[in-house]
Amino acid sequence: MSRVCVLGGGAWGTALALTALRAGRQVSLWAREPQAAEAIAMGSNPRYLPDVAFETGIKATTDIASALAEAEAVLVVVPAQALRDTLASAGPHLPAGAPLVLCAKGIESGTGRLLSEIAAEACPGSSTATLSGPSFATDVARAMPTAVVVAAKDEALAADLAALLSTPTFRCYSTGDQTGVEIGGALKNVLAIAAGAAQGAGLGASAQAALVTRGFVELRRIGVAFGAQPETLMGLSGLGDLVLTCASAQSRNFAYGLALGRGEPLAGRPLAEGVATAGIAVRIAAEKGVDAPIIAATARILAGKLTISQAVESLMSRPLKAEAD
Ligand SMILES: NC(=O)C1=CN([C@@H]2O[C@H](COP(=O)(O)OP(=O)(O)OC[C@H]3O[C@@H](n4cnc5c(N)ncnc54)[C@H](OP(=O)(O)O)[C@@H]3O)[C@@H](O)[C@H]2O)C=CC1
Ligand SMILES: O=C(CO)COP(=O)(O)O
Image (cartoon, rainbow, N blue to C red):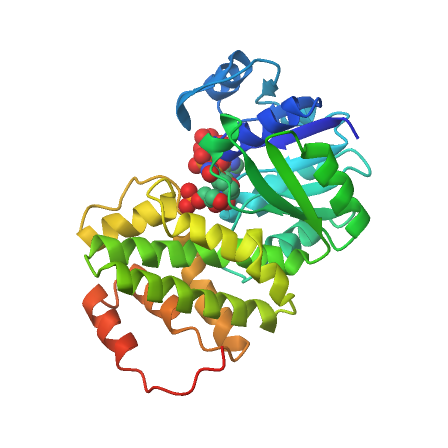
């Protein structure tokens, strides 16, 4: 494999296209807007990576068929809720045998499908992998040291894709636990909103640490209920990404929570995947019989059904029991 196509010209799509370029691959990229494609081809992405100038060499286009032509691997880097429609557009042009590498973090809000399940429905002939882990697009675009994981049920495919995308500054581990990697990436976004809201509401550093730690327990419980391996949830794509995004306003999910906690306007903010994932995560947890009170409280706050102080009161007054986890 040496020809990589990236679907999506946002922050993460651009950063991953640059990584593939730096790994020595031929890289095409599909963006919806002509200005975006032109800028990326010329070494900038003013809307999504405003402060980063980068090398040229990405063949960016608004023509999805030409972007996909001859691709040997396809990185799908549009928001989770746009994945199904994007794959429907890409499907007729996918080169035979090219795996889909799913790079978004979320769960489909209407159906509860994981992203690999959406891909299996939309492109039944394609194999899929998931790329996830603690990695801010600006860091990656600037070639700052970063480690992620590529997961596929076919472990040899995961290892091949990890080798395809690794560079001296972008270290890709590989695993066969795709479900574990997907769950970690989706749920950490919800918890990052909660952590940002706690900070914005001035609840203090002790509350913040309790929230992240007990939130991780909920992420792990849900992951295990899906059959994920606990080690995966403890790894880069679970705990690692949770730690990153719950501690930095560079995270759009954390920043969304911060604005929420401060009572600032939320309309028009950058993409925060956790907003669409929170409600469906609660439904999934309930279906699996998993107790997830922090995720549930976050969803209710986002839906305007609970204030942050009511959420704190309800979480702090839950009956204490000996916690096995
Ligand atoms: N940014 C980051 O640091 C990281 C992001 N991710 C994940 O990657 C995914 C994408 O995030 P990111 O690139 O940062 O997001 P951005 O908001 O930066 O970019 C989103 C991109 O998707 C396109 N897009 C939006 N809606 C649709 C749609 N309905 N159909 C097709 N394309 C659409 C946008 O195009 P247009 O401009 O035309 O609207 C844009 O190119 C998310 O799931 C995120 O969680 C993962 C790791 C790191
Ligand atoms: O997933 C990310 C880092 O690993 C990016 O987080 P945000 O989408 O919250 O910015």
